[in-house]
Amino acid sequence: MPTQERRRAERVVLSPSLTGTVGGQKVRMLDIGPIGTRVEHEDPLTDGAPLELSFRWDEEEIRIQCDVVRSDEHAHDPRERANIFHTGLQFLTPSPA
Image (cartoon, rainbow, N blue to C red; front, top):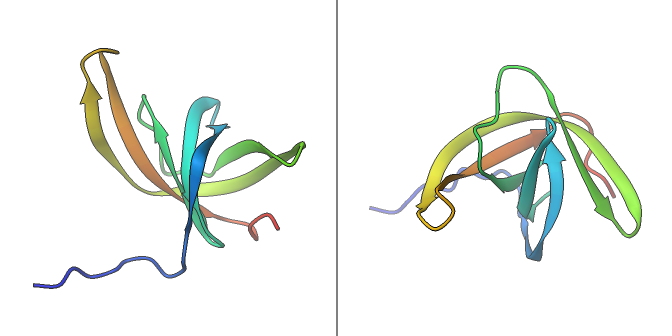
């Protein structure tokens, strides 16, 4: 059975990933598109209220409000004794240029 694509817009895979923060927590941005981004982090993000995503791009600090769309425990890293979460964030304001 074919899988249903949930994305409404194309995303660009960031390689290497960008580091930033969401709600004060360190994250790695894995991909980005015009309506959102996917981030990787160690502690669960709180949903239900807008969060600020902050990162540097071309020597400029970018700050954008976003909502958690989904968050899944992606893996457990036994070396780090940490959980790894992947979270989809939807931008609440137009995406950075």
